[in-house]
Length: 275
Length: 319
Image (cartoon, rainbow over all chains, first blue to last red):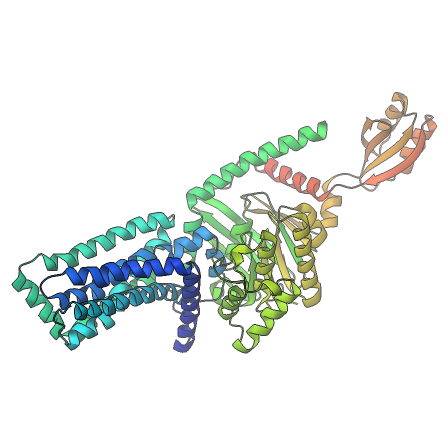
């Protein structure tokens, strides 16, 4: 990506312009009933039902759910629309014609999905703790267990949203983007789930190691996020988005179709003239 | 005064297919510049190149004095109205304009006033808080026009802005565009398939076909240059002898006859009086002599036919 000479403040302002628009548009897209049913289902299943019925280190289970599983699942669910949706709704070209930088467009859109995933994960985390308290499970108050979900959730959601945005740029439609992203999400969730099928000793050892070194975990996630963003910004191009909207095959097709129609139209005009 | 747009050999190739082929164009400031061509001629690709949304394969261009490599500067100073309004249907009209005003760096202190002025002027202020998906196509296109004006650009690209609009909506939008240019000196780069629209609005018209520039001229000169002068003579007594006498005149190219009238094509620069004289000498009674000129549509089709002939029927230039 060609880096512009914009100051950091200007870049942040541009990102916030895109972020605000995305969140507002996304919020308006659903009515109150739809919002409530989504929140009720997510919190009900992941924040109440699963913690209430879980066994073993239930506190760690809730923390992993909020820090990893939900950010991945929620970000993966909503990211497919980010560029492919703009293209389908016919708003992409006008957006690209604005002076907003490539960086602002990409980061603003990715962050909007990260915010969604984070809010969802935190709602479930809060509901999970309340459920544990209500069902008289033992709640361990360790910094790691409380800080990791809050701070790690957005950092875990970011790479998924980032990769999903790149897929959304290249995909022909929202549906095809969604299908590809689903495989990534599924693979990650299966990867995390293996933690719950390994022997109890290994499980405890891993959880305690993560719990004891939250800063190291966050630092690793930050590095991964930075690398993902760096690669994405280097590959993100306005022209690529435009070309994806009008592929070479389509352009050729248009030219052939144009020739056919034009020949027909002129023959009709000549016939009408003679008549 | 520097031209608003200058292109030199601007070329864009898609996988060997030349969508825009060595385009040399100069668009003066403060006019409505029509850019006409059939579907697939390269109009939209040209606009995308000039907006810096696509990179040229060859050639160069300057838009408002900025080179295409300064695409972000170009985008700061131009407005766009495309065939699709490009509005966020899940935002209100006001929120749409507020977002684009921020994107185009309109100072926060001026945003409200500018949005109010534009929406009031275009008759949309009362519905500013309605979601855009409740708007008619005409209202959406008006709103898109308002969006293009928010940052007071020096140049506006309009890609078939009235396509799909009903007659009153299209007429209202055309009037707004013309008023804008006459009032503020903004340059408009307009592509359209509506030749009557181009004829009534544009100061200069360029015709592009298969990626190549065919001609640039005023609408009047395009029409008059399209075919030889023709007169329609209405009257009685146009006998075969009278028609033969006309055909023998050196200034007459062709004569066709239809109910009570003759259509006579004469050589450019010649007068009609010898034609009238020859007819009256043959006993014809003449009631009316009308000079007819080609419509812009005829001129446009003639230009396309000429270029197709030059290309020898090949569908598109290839590298």
